Image 1 (cartoon, helix red, strand yellow):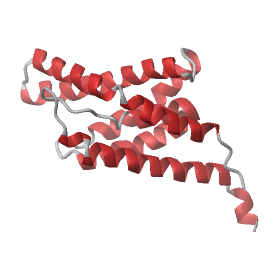
Image 2 (cartoon, one colour):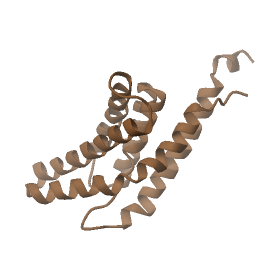
Image 3 (cartoon, one colour):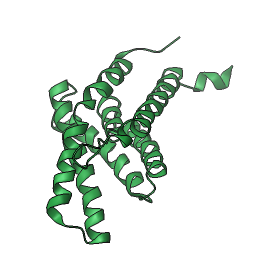
Image 4 (spheres, helix red, strand yellow):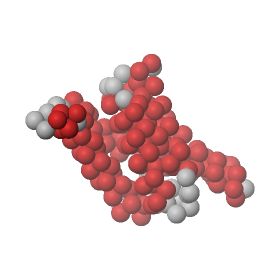
Length: 172
């Protein structure tokens, strides 16, 4: 009984529920969005998860779930080795910093931070292609902008369930 007193059950339950949400987001990304190409670009919603958790729960939560999300992304996308493992925790932490010092947790501010995070992720992916494969700049920028635009509607689908979980008490 004494060991159980040391465990914060609310945080444990919350982390399990966030992990389940991450599995759902990953499944939607892999099973649906990775197969739908519009004008040569695909939606990328995985960066939204660490951004959301970081803004709603804080930097440590954003970085931990960003690390998990990044490892899963690198496992899903065979062309990246550690790209997303490095990007996602940084997105979770930077979203927390933006929420603490620049914006609020409300939807318009969250939308702006998420859009910036999606664009940054797309540009880093384009930079990787540019540096490794000497790709042309304009088509890569077009694809990055299209990827960001296609990913924007999914902000709402991730924000509202995560916000409901963040505001809810899971004790006993």
